[in-house]
Length: 124
Ligand SMILES: [Zn+2]
Image (cartoon, rainbow, N blue to C red):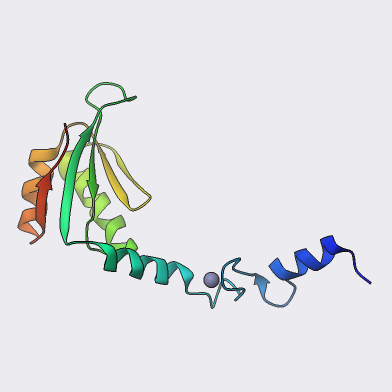
Protein backbone atom coordinates (compact mmCIF):
# COMPACT_ATOMS: atom_id res chain seq x y z
CA UNK A 1 0.00 0.00 0.00
CA UNK A 2 1.53 3.26 -1.04
CA UNK A 3 1.34 6.30 1.17
CA UNK A 4 -1.16 9.09 0.55
CA UNK A 5 1.76 11.24 -0.50
CA UNK A 6 2.73 8.73 -3.18
CA UNK A 7 -0.84 8.38 -4.40
CA UNK A 8 -1.22 12.14 -4.67
CA UNK A 9 2.03 12.54 -6.52
CA UNK A 10 0.92 9.74 -8.83
CA UNK A 11 -1.93 11.98 -9.97
CA UNK A 12 0.42 14.71 -11.01
CA UNK A 13 3.38 12.73 -12.24
CA UNK A 14 3.28 9.73 -14.46
CA UNK A 15 6.48 8.04 -15.49
CA UNK A 16 5.47 7.30 -19.05
CA UNK A 17 3.63 10.54 -19.80
CA UNK A 18 5.72 13.06 -17.94
CA UNK A 19 4.01 15.95 -16.19
CA UNK A 20 0.24 16.06 -16.11
CA UNK A 21 -1.93 19.13 -16.33
CA UNK A 22 -3.54 19.76 -12.91
CA UNK A 23 -6.77 20.94 -14.55
CA UNK A 24 -7.64 18.20 -17.02
CA UNK A 25 -5.21 15.43 -15.91
CA UNK A 26 -3.99 15.00 -19.47
CA UNK A 27 -0.28 14.98 -20.12
CA UNK A 28 0.96 18.49 -20.81
CA UNK A 29 1.80 17.53 -24.38
CA UNK A 30 -1.82 16.64 -25.22
CA UNK A 31 -3.53 19.12 -22.85
CA UNK A 32 -5.26 22.06 -24.50
CA UNK A 33 -6.23 24.06 -21.38
CA UNK A 34 -3.96 26.95 -22.39
CA UNK A 35 -5.59 27.15 -25.81
CA UNK A 36 -9.04 26.93 -24.26
CA UNK A 37 -8.24 29.69 -21.78
CA UNK A 38 -6.95 31.82 -24.65
CA UNK A 39 -10.14 31.07 -26.58
CA UNK A 40 -12.31 32.07 -23.62
CA UNK A 41 -10.35 35.27 -23.16
CA UNK A 42 -10.84 36.15 -26.83
CA UNK A 43 -14.58 35.45 -26.59
CA UNK A 44 -14.90 37.70 -23.54
CA UNK A 45 -13.38 40.70 -25.33
CA UNK A 46 -15.59 43.45 -26.74
CA UNK A 47 -13.22 44.26 -29.60
CA UNK A 48 -12.11 47.56 -28.16
CA UNK A 49 -8.44 47.98 -27.30
CA UNK A 50 -7.90 50.10 -24.22
CA UNK A 51 -4.81 52.23 -23.74
CA UNK A 52 -3.99 53.48 -20.31
CA UNK A 53 -1.05 55.30 -18.82
CA UNK A 54 -0.10 54.00 -15.42
CA UNK A 55 2.26 55.86 -13.17
CA UNK A 56 1.37 54.66 -9.70
CA UNK A 57 4.26 52.92 -8.01
CA UNK A 58 6.46 53.36 -11.06
CA UNK A 59 9.39 55.61 -11.74
CA UNK A 60 9.42 58.45 -14.26
CA UNK A 61 6.79 58.44 -16.96
CA UNK A 62 5.31 55.13 -15.99
CA UNK A 63 4.06 52.70 -18.59
CA UNK A 64 1.40 52.56 -21.24
CA UNK A 65 -0.77 49.48 -20.87
CA UNK A 66 -2.70 47.95 -23.75
CA UNK A 67 -5.63 45.74 -22.83
CA UNK A 68 -8.22 43.81 -24.75
CA UNK A 69 -6.29 43.28 -27.98
CA UNK A 70 -8.28 40.60 -29.84
CA UNK A 71 -5.26 38.45 -30.73
CA UNK A 72 -4.07 35.06 -29.58
CA UNK A 73 -1.07 34.71 -27.29
CA UNK A 74 1.53 34.27 -30.00
CA UNK A 75 0.21 37.27 -31.91
CA UNK A 76 0.19 39.31 -28.70
CA UNK A 77 3.85 38.41 -28.22
CA UNK A 78 4.82 39.59 -31.68
CA UNK A 79 2.70 42.74 -31.30
CA UNK A 80 4.54 43.49 -28.04
CA UNK A 81 7.86 43.09 -29.84
CA UNK A 82 6.71 45.34 -32.68
CA UNK A 83 5.46 48.08 -30.36
CA UNK A 84 8.71 48.04 -28.39
CA UNK A 85 10.63 48.44 -31.63
CA UNK A 86 8.39 51.20 -33.00
CA UNK A 87 8.42 53.11 -29.71
CA UNK A 88 12.15 52.50 -29.24
CA UNK A 89 11.60 51.49 -25.65
CA UNK A 90 11.19 48.49 -23.39
CA UNK A 91 8.06 46.58 -22.63
CA UNK A 92 6.58 43.25 -21.71
CA UNK A 93 3.52 41.07 -22.01
CA UNK A 94 2.05 40.37 -18.58
CA UNK A 95 -1.20 38.44 -18.06
CA UNK A 96 -2.30 39.24 -21.60
CA UNK A 97 -1.74 42.96 -21.02
CA UNK A 98 0.99 44.66 -23.03
CA UNK A 99 3.11 47.13 -21.09
CA UNK A 100 5.26 49.64 -22.94
CA UNK A 101 7.64 51.92 -21.08
CA UNK A 102 6.79 55.61 -20.99
CA UNK A 103 3.74 57.50 -22.21
CA UNK A 104 3.37 56.06 -25.73
CA UNK A 105 -0.39 56.40 -26.09
CA UNK A 106 -0.32 58.63 -29.18
CA UNK A 107 2.15 56.45 -31.08
CA UNK A 108 0.50 53.19 -30.06
CA UNK A 109 -3.00 54.45 -30.82
CA UNK A 110 -2.14 55.37 -34.40
CA UNK A 111 -0.17 52.13 -34.88
CA UNK A 112 -3.07 50.00 -33.68
CA UNK A 113 -5.63 51.97 -35.65
CA UNK A 114 -3.51 51.47 -38.76
CA UNK A 115 -3.85 47.72 -38.11
CA UNK A 116 -7.62 48.08 -38.01
CA UNK A 117 -8.22 47.93 -34.25
CA UNK A 118 -10.74 50.10 -32.46
CA UNK A 119 -8.75 51.97 -29.82
CA UNK A 120 -9.99 53.82 -26.77
CA UNK A 121 -7.89 55.90 -24.38
CA UNK A 122 -8.85 55.34 -20.77
CA UNK A 123 -7.62 56.61 -17.44
CA UNK A 124 -4.78 59.12 -16.73
ZN1 LIG B 1 -5.06 20.68 -19.23
